[in-house]
Length: 221
Image 1 (cartoon, one colour):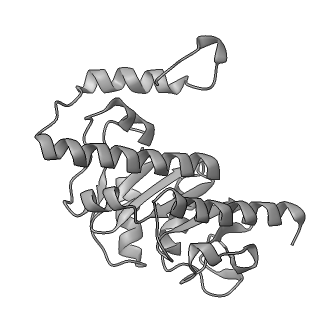
Image 2 (tube, helix red, strand yellow):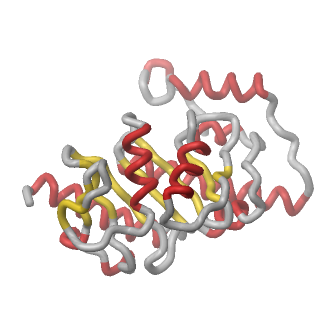
């Protein structure tokens, strides 16, 4: 194992612990992966996030074969299928975070109640249809929900966020959980006034240049 690979796997282990610290996961729930030349590295099955270390990570090919390690997360299929279908993604985060999971049990998408919904790639955060965990049916449902999106919630299950880096995927997962909490809270008060399609298009146009050109000084805080 080269030092570069070791550093990558340590970053995944650190991110797994950070998910617990951020309240996104507890115990052995949830999983993470990162793309690599051979396919992808994914967290193992049944290992508590606080006990995870680099040597336990599982290397898999995009054909679904285990190349190194023992038993991968039972959810490895949607990690693999996302990498195959979406070459722009290099990391995938799956969480059973409390607010996103609560909303997923309604089996409804999260509508444009707040402009930051656009961070997930569109004007809604879709809810993938329910299917048994670890199955190809679930992976197919996730891919459909993530069409032109970077994240989705999963019916009666949790959420997924992807990005061009582990840092980006983690950041988006935190954002989705934050938005889920906000939407959960506003639903206690009533029905929010939603942003229009035109208003969300304007937001997404602004986000296209965010962080790419410091001279524009785009600010969405």
